[in-house]
Length: 198
Ligand SMILES: CC(C)(COP(=O)(O)OP(=O)(O)OC[C@H]1O[C@@H](n2cnc3c(N)ncnc32)[C@H](O)[C@@H]1OP(=O)(O)O)[C@@H](O)C(=O)NCCC(=O)NCCS
Image 1 (cartoon, rainbow, N blue to C red):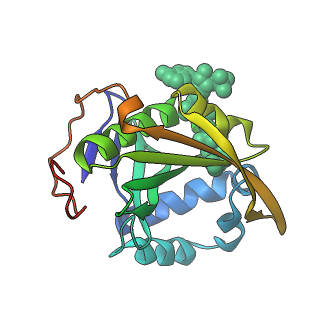
Image 2: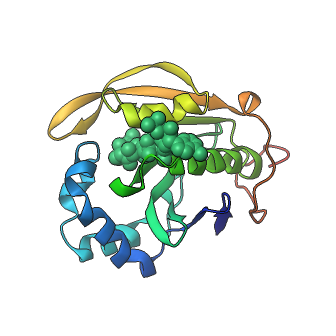
């Protein structure tokens, strides 16, 4: 599965072929990543990344994660995923990270925007949630930039660096999202039973 976001950015399914380059990216900026991502300290060698990719395979956003590699020009820049999918209520969460040197180019805002389009128009979701740690200003800026609504604080919703952290919860509803329909993605069958048009 590939999503062409624009001339600079392409999203593609996370695959084992990318394990080495992904591990090198994580390893190149682990202090920066570990400030907000708890899994970084458990990613100490290539095999940890291989195990992670294998753990993702065969799962999806309803029973695990559906993860995309973010390619910026010819470089792997980071990952974006769908998780915590709820078929009954047609809701899903998005998570993301970028390698340090790929920040400040609008890569994640554009990747998120494409994933949101995809989730609303192709997958048939109605609600998308982004949760960011209270102090993670760079991450919060993304849902804010995309006009998500701030819903409130999920108190101590995440353990980070051995401490409970509050999470800011942002959401976007399908009816609030400007239709783009311009994504270059293959139509796939969605698995939301009983919902017409998906
Ligand atoms: C969170 C994270 C992805 C944000 O990265 P980012 O580079 O700020 O986000 P974007 O790629 O959307 O880029 C936005 C920045 O590029 C600028 N920009 C340049 N071109 C742009 C464009 N076409 N569209 C949007 N923004 C653009 C924006 O002004 C903004 O810069 P600013 O913060 O100085 O205003 C990144 O800091 C990260 O991965 N951090 C570590 C892990 C993490 O915290 N993950 C999230 C856990 S909830």
